[in-house]
Length: 248
Image 1 (cartoon, rainbow, N blue to C red):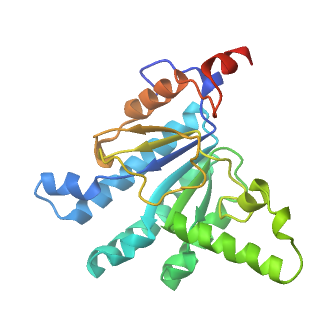
Image 2: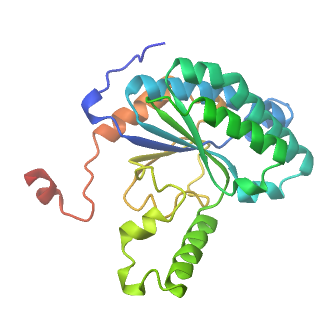
């Protein structure tokens, strides 16, 4: 379905990251089990992936499952993990059809072996696609990611391959799981909470942020388009003054 509002295709953010929050609250408000919210949330993933592709977004990163989520009730975690992989398998043919490449970031070694193998298969099947890159943050924690990068660089220093004074922002960024992904231009959080929740803490230093009270299952293409349009009216200063930016 096409957008119902105009978007300047020359000012579309290259990378949009989304904290998909509110599945459980959406279900509870309807007297349903929390798992029903996760199921409906998958439909929203399909809808917003299509919207991002249509808009010309190059990277869409979805906060799918955090390391903290492992602490939820086992029944919910098991059901959610199975749902994630089943949804990926179901959507893979359409991802290929729409030229969408699937990849994942996070501590994937913690995932159940069967789920990890199925995820790897789906990523391989879309690896040739050249359109939108859909990034699933699975078993992801920004603090974990930063700590792993520090360990990696410390090991290189200890082995004599790298001097401490040679570590630059570029070298540090290249040690993160997002090394081949540009920093997000826009971060959207659904569900209304005003927090980052351990998501891409290093990468969002100058990212524009938008928060909506809408629960993820109700988040529409028009909602997404409106966030893109709002982004296009913001002035990104990166520490400069507004006057300096306008002179560029």
